[in-house]
Length: 510
Image (cartoon, rainbow, N blue to C red):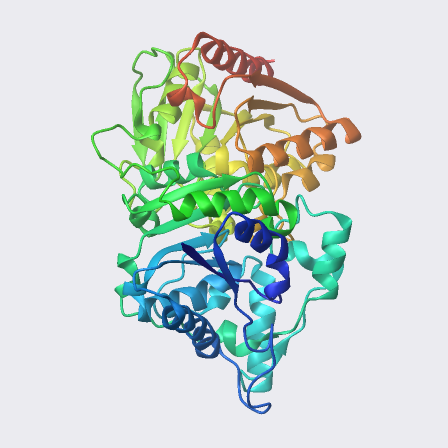
């Protein structure tokens, strides 16, 4: 019999598992929901501090009781940690590694030895608030009040939650002991040998396909995910699937316990990563000049010529080689426009993490000014073309665009901070900036098979464009995926590239 031990996230307790636990039990599993001290039950000593070690001990107590009660050894114990709950789950599993059959990361981060749970809180302002509260009190034995009803989205996407579920989540929430967020997790490494499954809630963060892209790019922290003992599932919902889709979650956990799920492919494992596959058009080579972090692909003739600056997405790890300005999609577009009398520009910017948008935007702005200062470039006719995770930087150009910016284009862009980024209040929010774009032409290339969380930001942008009367042209690639230029070299995708280039150059040369 499979024994599930379910550990809830911040501010919540065993009650959130009610429907999922009932479904698992009905299917023949044994289910235990852990009441964490200070969340699901009061401290044994009313005056004692509650920290991460307290919660690890809570999980260990349940594991040991299951082992002691087993009629025979070797039972399949599956530990499930949601959100913050993955921290005590990993701490306990590290000490009982031989007794655990699998760990399920339910829409959670990847805690590391020596790192406190506070580092996984998505909202940067929240992290600062918690750290400030602890510093102000000079202690870690206080509590963080639970979110108000309208503030749960700061902790994760509430997509899929009914009004009743959100009301219940709020009514039953408990203060989170500060020590549980501030005390570093300590691991010996034993837990690394336990098979694992990630359940990705795609309305709150990346799905399997995006994870594979990040592994291919070479993100060091994700390399361990491409292991034969690590599987993945997707649920098309927000951060609380036990409340939004409890039956689907129970089914997923059952499959995970049996070792099912999607496997990622290690980077360089006999396959060309998506970002390094050939561009879908056969574009002739063009002369290229490299200066610092910027490459110019030059057209024939002395100029001055209009220019298109292509801005890559991300985050891309600093160690990635080749760097984005040499990726076939960027060089393909740059050569394509150079063949039509326009300077194509590729550059590397420092978007290595979602906290790097400020310096990445500064890198882009600096590169644009250097390009405009080049005597071969017509400084009054420049277009900016953004891709994927570079999309939030468009906000810097949409609000009060300069007169020399003749067009802004974006392919499969992220056009609002994703729920798990913690950037809700940042200035890198294109949807909010769009009403200030005036008559600036915007060309949006939309992938029909886009991931749910990114597609939601695109649709929000399109709706805002209709509301404020923005000058928006949409070019759809119905069968295209995120990064279709190297993933989907079909006739429809090629036609979309030709249309997009034609639309940008028409506005640039007009």
